[in-house]
Image (tube, rainbow, N blue to C red; front, top):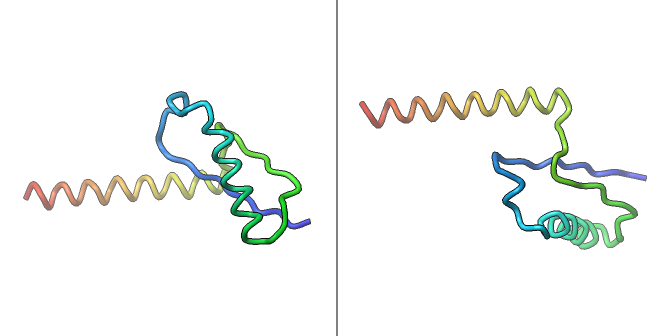
Length: 80
């Protein structure tokens, strides 16, 4: 069995999402899987509140830090 994994995230308050957000995301992934592979998925585990493994978290932390530095540089250039 071959397993494809995905974690997707953004800064948001998950409690503000509509109740159907969980099922909508899961159905979209399962539909895309079936369209790409021609097979129905045997399982699909998903849910809001998942966590990154330590390596993924370090990568995201570095990216967020870089994004902040780039934004600060842009503001300095604009403000002169």
